[in-house]
Length: 265
Image 1 (spheres, rainbow, N blue to C red):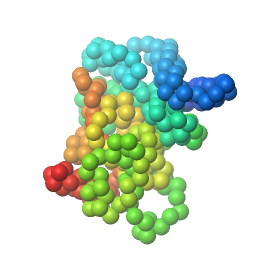
Image 2: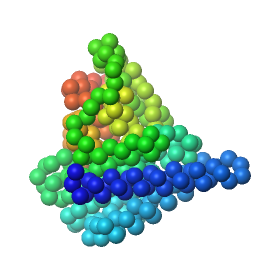
Image 3: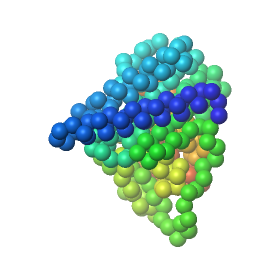
Image 4: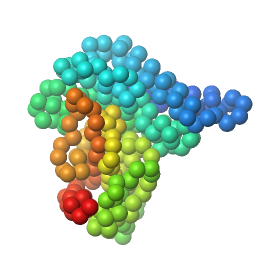
């Protein structure tokens, strides 16, 4: 594991612990914590911690975060940390487990070489499961005893904004759609073998997918746009609206099904 990957892992874990502590603290106050206020405070607490630690350990690097103003100077930087302090704010506020913390590093030299979207280090923490996934973990292991030929493919989609063409794609590849919150939670579910694919369309930003993509690609899974093109990071506008993550052998059939469904739609 590289020093940058170790730092990404530490930051994701520490932010996750801070978020768990905040939720416990607010739950002990009289009355039930307001989910929106808990989410708002969680975003702020995690952002402050990540900003402070990055300034301490990588003071020369730029940062792109969901919870801070976008500094255009990052476009000329050689190293940019792309972070989502709390991916799944709604789920966190509601007390659900499907929320994550994302920390990824993009490097200009890696992007110039065409290596892994420019992402060189990544970590995704899912604190309620006490799990941490990093780009240094190596090939994905299937932690399941199910007999794959006897099971239908499971495609994870947003529980609030599933793609309009998701049903057509699922029918084409003989799959079941499974709703779940948080991009990071869905990506790590594919890594764990709890699903075979994750499909999203209709609005995301770089911080939603950078760390998950860095982790799953390092593990040997497929990650791309829904049209099969490469994901690009540290763009002038960080809007990156769609994503496919899946086992490598499913990439061809799934992308073909998406292309057919989007043409028909």
